Image 1: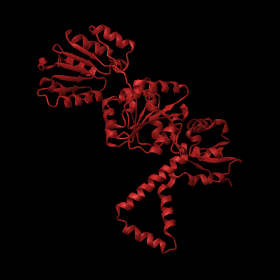
Image 2: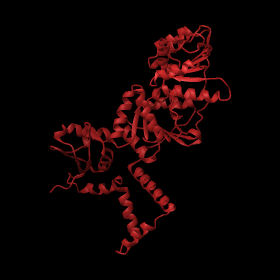
Image 3: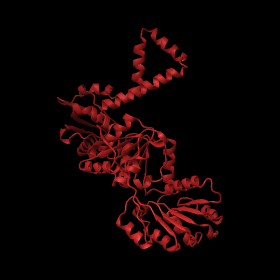
Image 4: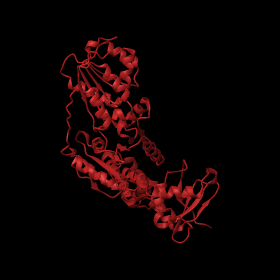
Length: 460
């Protein structure tokens, strides 16, 4: 057992990430003061390593409730000399079911101590905790005069629930962020959205409280290194995320309280960088957004979701920038010879450049296929589309209607004839919606099977 007299302060945090972040900040603050040893203790790390560190003696412990109680039961951590106790993110710890552990810890520390309780919100359980364990507490409320985020552009989009995934896809394609952080209000929503994004071919992972510590470490490692572009997370799981390169934060769901909005969008615009924050608003949620604007004293500007044409123009612009950079970098002599060889065959340089552009953009430029929509053999005013699933995949007509209407927002009643065969299906949609259906359903899923969709060949 370690020298218990060394423990003077103990801070509790709800998650491993937040505990590590607090420990790092305290080490920075105590950099010029000798003899202060700080130790984070949390689940997911071998307890023997923590026991070894505790035996050497520490002045400040930052711990998650569960692991602190574990050490108390093993008698590798005694709290009878504790002078200060800090409960950080107390509301979150209660939401996560740590109340029993918190009370066990507070009952074990000396009655003569200073107790600090930090909470973004003050619900009834927090008041009960304060009344039971704090002596003549002073309540200090920090009022946000304004949200200090000069480098963050804030926008909201009025989007129906069923169209949110498509709106998110458009924004990602349009802005092409290096790293994007997407917030959902529930763990179930994180899993659903992650599944939909991955089905559309995006490099995305999820983060929520039901994941094991090793899973969360793996996901965070991939996000920090840029191995994944999009992280979908709940508020609690995102506590402690400290990544400077997040370009875009998306509130897929309007946050449950105003403070969460401030925490969420503060994940971008770090270290003097510019950032963007987008919020999806459905129906009466617009009133909640107004509350957020009043609370944060900030302006959130309404914007329209980028159109398909906007997205395509962005992709072309990005390609042109890459071409310019390649020219600037030089080293083109070998390639110029090949171009000159083609020009000897009576092609001019403009035609060659256009052809290479078309090849580079490939299937991303959907106009190449949309030209075929008038010649698919559908009824007048209808485009006939081919989908590579059928009866053998247990596909019914209603599955086709629900998938197309649900993911594109096109009214299901506008869908025309559906012909289902063993391994494929033909479906007719109004010509004016056909491009939208092709773009949205590309690499999507129907009943869990990834599909391919394209204009049908004209009936013979």
